[in-house]
Length: 604
Image (cartoon, one colour):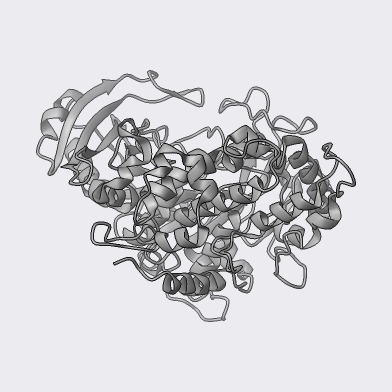
């Protein structure tokens, strides 16, 4: 039977309300050092210090691995080949020689659609190995085996797990997009593999393969990815705290079904003021054009840029900005026709609820709001706001997440999304039936996203980074996650978790932002040496950047501008002297946003 709609929505409301409660700012010792007294003044027992990984060399040849790995349970190895040094280049750097192993695991034939499904994967095993395993979580709805490089860390990363000598695993999470994209959602097992079971199945297989390849298993294991890969990471942190030592989650859509439904909610709002055909992305975009988005971004900067002490095109004090900026007051209201210098009152009334957070018909919020930030005018925004709800979220919500799934979502995604009953769909994200025995909010999300105490007690660590201008997964949802983890750990989140908001950055990378950073090295140092990260220096990607140029850098910025990314809830503030292009001119202020209250007005 389907779950009754009211119970999950009430429990969701309670969870949301709890997640959005503001907690006291962590004491400076907890943020800076990760140990010492918690914020209630109690001295915690020392957390265990995990030992560093030790290197090893590949035993035998790559080609011999094909035979040596043949005994892996529920697994078929399809190739094992040698990749010479320099064959693969990452950020202009040659990757050392390694073995590329491909295979398929846990094949099954669906009783629903008759298709054959399996978890396809790739492992890249360095000949000279650093003793570590990196499980790469991939984006979107998975469905492709992307190269197992362990790339993560915002835009154009200059390092990766593979470059650092990790053994890296990548998979398609149990289905191929060549079989019909989101259509795999009709198969109950493929849903579960995508949500969490592929990770649970591949983890022991990968560790056994590493043990066969090197004569020992990994000393330390890590999990990382951005977007859906960030979701995979936080799900693994909750479900497999005993299997991984470090977790790096970028823009983690840990409430992905709710975020996807919220994006459809947004499309329905935009459709009410679109002047073109809202069933097409260009038509839907007429609701809030590029010129108008840049107008609002400029107004946000005008109100908030100086809050951190520097007028530099970046808003560091995001929380205080939400209290200062008001869409209705600070953006001109059109007296006549729309001409890019104003928004109509109807536009403002349609757009403001999207930033405030998607709600049911009775005003009950079911997903986090989105902060007004300087990246609103960036080129990456239209895809997520105007294309995704019609062609991505439609298939995800309609076929992968809903119980029962909807065929209309595959045949006409725009019609599905623009006519969707949000209240009913929300209930269906929590629903089960005889065929689909786990709801989307069960198989796609951590069992308890906030309870990471098992992870904490064994000495494992978590780093999250998230673009403040991310238009699809809200940074406010990640902030709610951090506060929830802090509550569930008795005020000890600073001992084992960090959240780094990235001002101006869009979804995983890009935007008017310093979006290039190395999060892997600080995570490893924290896990294996006990060196807790404070701020992390991020760079702009101007002309000549080896990781790739970010075309959205404002003209006045230095090509190599740097800023400290400060651990939430602290905020980067200008010291009052020094170059505005240098991270050294800024300090992380532990007080965070300093206004007297926490309510986010979001334009009201």
